[in-house]
Image (cartoon, rainbow, N blue to C red; front, side):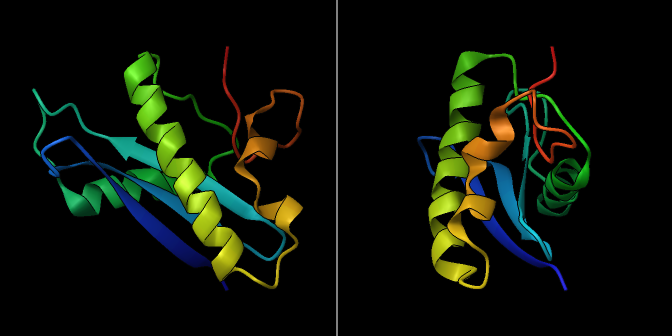
Amino acid sequence: MEQVLKLYIRDKNKRPRGVAVAIKTDRNVLYGFSLCNVNLDRWDKKLGIAIALARATAPSYQLPKLQDREALVLDAFEKLEERATRYFKDLPPDKIKMSNHLHEDISPAPFCILP
C-alpha cells in the first residue's frame, strides 16, 4: 500500500505555486513535484497533485532549469524528507533520503537529473 505526503510550495505572499510529494512504496520513498507559472497559469490543486504523483512514479524526470525554481523544489524535497523520516518509521533512513535520488548513476532511479 502506498502512502503519500504532500507539501504545497508557496510564493512569498503565501499563495500556492506548486506541490511536492513523497510516496512510500514497499522498498523506498519516491519524490515528485509540480510548479505552475504564476504569470501564465492558474493554480489547480488536483492537476498539481496529479503531475507531482506522475513525476514521482516516472523512471526519471528533470528538475526546473531556472535556479530559483529549482531551489524551491529542492527546499520542498528537503522538508518532505524530514517529514518522511519521522512518518515512515518502518523504512530505513537510507531508503528515505532524497539525496540518493539526485545522482545520474543510480539505475533504475526514481529521481534523476536528465542531461
